[in-house]
Amino acid sequence: MPQSQLALRVALTPPAPAAEGGRKARSARRAPGLTFMVRCTADLPLVLDALAGRMEALGYLKRDCFGMHLALEEALVNALKHGHGHDPAKAARVRLCVTAEQAMAEVEDQGPGFDPSAVADALQPENLGRACGRGLLLMRHYTTWVRFSDRGNRVTLCKCRCPDESGLGPGE
Image (cartoon, rainbow, N blue to C red; front, side, top):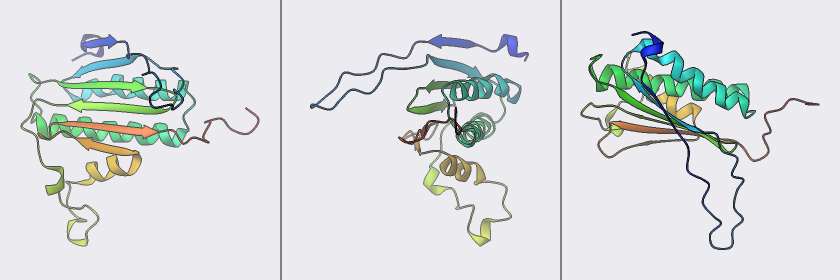
C-alpha cells in the first residue's frame, strides 16, 4: 500500500493538567499527538519518521531518538506479525505524543493478545539462538518504561527526558 494511502488522523493533545496539591505545573509546551493506522511493514517509515522528527525538533539526544525509533519499530513488527499474522485486512493503531518532557508511543493491534511475562528471557543461555523475544528486550532496554494492557494487545512505550538533558551540544 503506498504511503499516500496510509490512513492518518491527527488529533490535538489535551492541555497539560493544572497543578495539584501545591505542586508546580510543568510547562505546557506540547507537540500535537498523531494517530496512524498501520496495515503492513511498508507503512512503518511514515510512523517512525514522524516520531523521530518530533523528538529531533524538541532537541532529544540522538541516542534517545534512535532508541525510541527502534523500540517503536519492534512493537509495530510484533503487532503485524504476532497480533495480525500479516493480515492486511487488520490495522494496528499507533498513537504518538512527543512533548519536551517525554516521548510516548502506543501500539494496539486487533489480535488476541499475549502474556509478556510468558515470553522467555532472550538473554538466558538456552534462548540465545532463538529468534523470538528480542523485540521485548529491545523495547525494555531503550525506553524509560513499557506497559502492556491486561489483554496483551496494546503496548505503551515511554522515553522520559532526563531533567538535566537539554539535547544540545556544547556551545549550542
